[in-house]
Amino acid sequence: MTRLIPILPCQSIKEQVSFYESLGFKTIQIYTRPNPYAVVNYSTLELHFYGTKRILPTENPQMCYIKVDDVNQVYEDFTTGLKRYMGKVPRSGIPRISKLKLLVEDRRFIMTDIGGNTFYIGTPNADLSEPAFYRSIESVEYAKNFEILYDLIYSKEDSLSAFKMLEKFFPAEDKNSINIGDLDLAKIWLVALEIHLQRDNVVNQSINDKLKKLFNIYNTENSDWNKILQQYNNIISGE
Image (cartoon, rainbow, N blue to C red; front, top):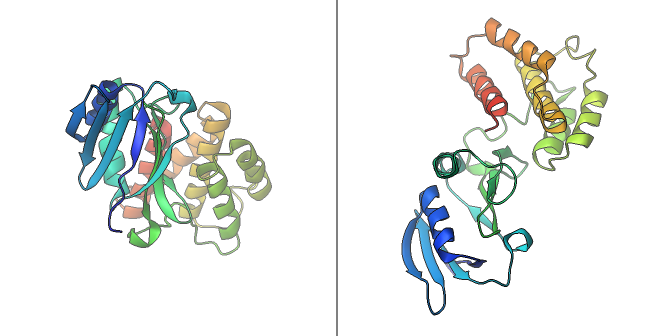
């Protein structure tokens, strides 16, 4: 077996094709009658869809994992296309697309299309040049706790549990006094910013100010600090 092509349902072939074209896919075939069917492709990825009224998008259980060579580029193409198509990058409802997540096994994002089909799209960490940058800190004493905290908010998307662990592992009053480097501290503040944002739906001003203070101290032309700044901008902008 050398190739697997999923055949997935949708309510409207025309709307489904229009959605995928907005992401950068090309339409290879489309039939609206007697049996609605379409074939689209993006690079070497090919997807097939059939039209049916039997499955509602909100009740569609179909899922598929897609391994790609460069998840960052695919994510950029899809979010840029969706923003043009819908005027925004939808994070909830149908369709929707998640933020990029750096997990134990891969870097990925999750997309649910207009027909309710859900795709997990990722690149294995072994294929990434710097797979663990955001998920790891240099401090041996705090590294494991940080990984647990990171996975709670980005892998499990459990902001309530993540908030409890944040207070347990890195109490607010102790964050500035723990014996770690400023780059590690910035990573902790980034995760804390994401946790508070998901939990409260607002940017925590105190954490935001602390990160800005670090940006004023360190030159963001440095590759590591530039990554921290990029992640900060992604969190703040909702990307």
